[in-house]
Each structure stands twice: as C-alpha cells, then as structure tokens.
Image (cartoon, rainbow, N blue to C red; front, side):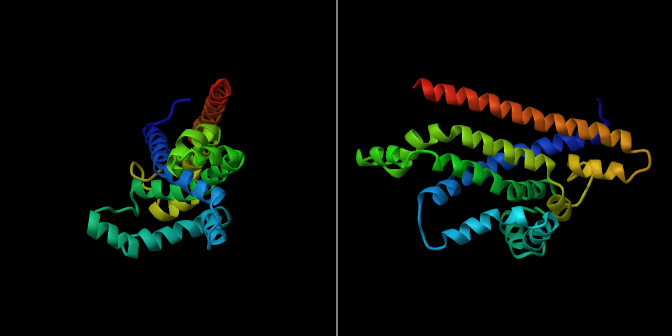
Length: 230
C-alpha cells in the first residue's frame, strides 16, 4: 500500500511527533506517577485532576487552550518567542506539544499503576540501609516498573500518532509542516475521489499502532523474564 508524497510526509511527521513527544514526556510522566503513588501532600487531588483533565476535555477545547496560552499572542507563547525564539503555534513543534498534553495522562496512569504494584517494603528496606530516594528508585523501583513504563510509552506514542482534535486546533493542517496522518486522512475524505488514498493512510495508521503494541508486549515479556531471573 504505497502512499503519495503528501502521504509519506504526513506519515513521517506523525512518527517524528510521536517519538519526540515520548522522549519529552516520559521522564516527567515517571516522576509525576511516582509522586502521585508514593507521596502524600496538600493539593495531591488537584494535581491528579489536572494531569487527567485532557482525558475528559474535548480535544478541540484542549487545542484552543493551547492556542491561547502558547500561541504567538498568548502569555507563554510571547515569553518563549521573546526569550528563546521558539514559536509553537502552526509549527510541527506545536503538534509535539499537543501530543504530549494528550498522551501524558495515559502514560502517568500506566506507570502509576506499576509503581503501586511494587511492595513499598522493598523500597523501605533499601532506605533503611541509607540509600537516598533517587538511589532507591533507580535500583529497586525502576527495574520492577519497566513493563509499566513500556506500556505507558506505547499508549502515549499511539495517542500521539492518532491525535487529531487538539493538533488541528493548535497548529492547523498545513501540508508538509503540521499535517499529521490523521489530518491528512481527514483532508482526503473532504476531497472527491480521495477515499482510496484515505484508506491507504488508514491501513498505515493501523499497522503502526499494531506494531507498537506488539513491540511493547515483546519488550515487556523480555523485561519481566530478566527481572524474574535476577
């Protein structure tokens, strides 16, 4: 199922957005998940609600909030452009930000469940030996939650390559610049005779998602087997 030049551009951009969003979001998602799973503090419920807010808001609303905040006239957008020369609205980097925001709750949830499944007594035993929190997390918790991290990463990646509403609202649908695979599919469905091209793109999108899930399952099994052998 070959794609035309515009289709390949959209596919490659979706992959770029997906991979970049995971690289940016996953470390923060691990930290937030650990804080929510292992720490009690004032405002924890508010933080949890804020993290999961993109799951319940319509994606178009999320995209609009990003636009008025990170757009060239938004407070954060003005700060980024004047200080660092970074413009997110109507750029592929803005699509990355939209993917991060939409996929972040899924990553945090998967990793938090993995952390909560770890017996706290294992971490406490390491702490009583004088190990600092970061060392305990790195040597005890992290190896045990790797399958959850992989699952969260895959869900975040799948959400990133499939994100449409927030992305098209924040960065529009500019071919070769911000047109991801879902946006390209939508465009083809609006063009008379574009159904065949849209079907090819849909097949590629399904293949990407399936490959990500299979790869995650394979990696998770290998990690679990390695942990069991130690």
